[in-house]
Image 1 (spheres, rainbow over the protein chains, first blue to last red):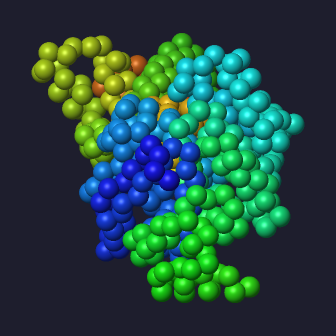
Image 2 (image 1 turned 180 degrees about the vertical axis):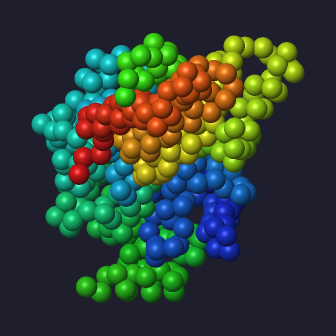
Amino acid sequence: MAVDPLIELRDVNKHFGELHVLQDIDLTVGKGEVVVVIGPSGSGKSTLCRAINRLETIESGTITLDGQPLPEEGRALARMRAEVGMVFQSFNLFAHKTVLENVSLAQTKVRGRKKADADRRSRELLDRVGLSAHADKYPAQLSGGQQQRVAIARALAMDPKALLFDEPTSALDPEMINEVLEVMQQLAREGMTMIVVTHEMGFARSAANRVVFMADGRIVEDRSPEEFFTAPRSERAKDFLSKILKH
Amino acid sequence: MNVLTDNFAIYAEGFLGTVELTVYASLLALALGFLMASFRVAPVASLRAFGTVWVTVLRNTPLTLLFFAVLLGLPRFGLVLPFQAFAVLALGCYTSAFICEALRSGINTVPRGQGEAARSLGMTFAQTLGVIVLPQAFRSVIPPVGSTLIALAKNSAIAGAFSVTELLGTYKTLSELGYNIIWTFVWIAVGYLIITLAISALFNLLERKWGVAR
């Protein structure tokens, strides 16, 4: 898809001590594109995802959002982060706030919306992820799948330009994975720009525009899901797929 | 036994002196401790360094030495305050180092993901700390902060050596008046007990209301 690039990474490098976790990463994600990042654990895919939100710093290279380079620190970085939603493996809902407060908080604190407006918007979004009945509960009272759907609603409440998903279903019981994937499928259909780090191959096949396969800190393949799953080019990807698709 | 009833006014004055020192120094220690804990987790390296130096210097200086430094040192730089204010300054700064570390250990009990989620939503450092991290840290720091303030109440006795009116210092007057030293000290101890048990009660109350539910 040769559309407007929204997120661009150029020559990005990062080490964790001895481990070269990101090696010369080049990646462009266009507006409205859904890019699924897969790969064995330790391949750097989560780090890649977190680096785009600057939860991980990078040592060299550039990351731009909508043509703007990622600011180093401070308010400029905070403003940029408000434009990119992030959904975590461990949900990270604010434990001391109700579901409604979780979704409304950043709208009032960061976007400067009035509380009533923020709450109205939050209820719309909770309704959309099927959780309007749980608005006054605390996160600990919800199941994992419900918590993750609240986390998606919380990210959406900022009206982000793109959403990053860092293994959003890896901490969930199998029966709760689908309720989260359905919400993500719906977002993909609506044209949200998404980068999804996941092990859900079904989701990658059905929702992704592109599959990025990472191994040992490098992007090994970057192709359409159809091509990737039926005819992977690299030995590394063939090996990976043969292991996970066996059962 | 009648040392208390005969000299109630002296005891009361000393008791109030200790209460005042404790309350003012506690407020100062909490405010400074809060500030220094924020510094120690700040993204700015110079603030972190400042917080570390503050804690290291104050926590490792004997309190009596700190009293000397403040009461004799500061006037040389032209800062002249009543002795009680100097005592509050010394006690408050000293205790703030301990409060800072208690708060910081509380901050460390809050999962990393909470702060990351807040930052990923575009909250600033101050918002992340103030709205997300500290309210959750608060629950687990109630007991250690209580202990630190009890220690402060007892440490305030050092101020008596620098002619600040406080509870322990009353023994000098009373022993000069010829009262039994044992009973004098018993009543002084009871006075401290009232203050420290009051602090314990306050923190038990806080813990019941805000503490971590188990």
